[in-house]
Image 1: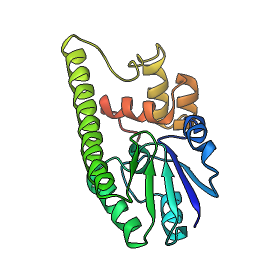
Image 2: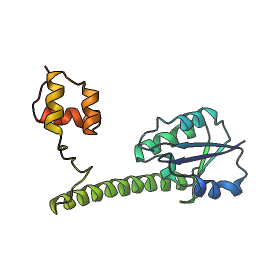
Image 3: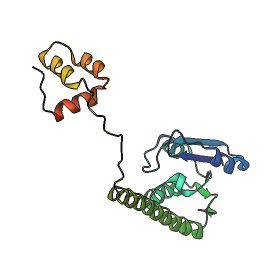
Image 4: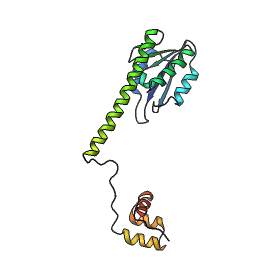
Length: 189
């Protein structure tokens, strides 16, 4: 019987300290850690952990949201663990899948987690739309054409300078340069 810890954060700039501290007193035999979104169960460390665990092992997680973001994925993972006769313990929610009550509560918490995530995304979408209605601009501000635009583009269009030279003179990157060229319907002959 081994004690396994699974730790996940959503992006590389986040740290795992909080989860490591939560699991530190449990004498974990092996940790599986990854920095990747929980939107899918197709995650390298998760797959490795699922292949590693054996009958009688206990998988410890800080919270169910670290294992899966959707109820469907959570239940699928729990089913895989149950087939292998691996117990799941979630510290935050005090869930232990050895018991029928623990499995029931796990399902409820999974559904609530998914609902909260969907509500957060909906509020974010509504907030962005409200900001747009109030005139808030998103993204990088538009770069005005440089004063020497017409002269440089005329030289480029005649073939007197290369596109790279035109970009240098205009101090524009490739994407901005060609986007502006397309907007003005200029063609290089």
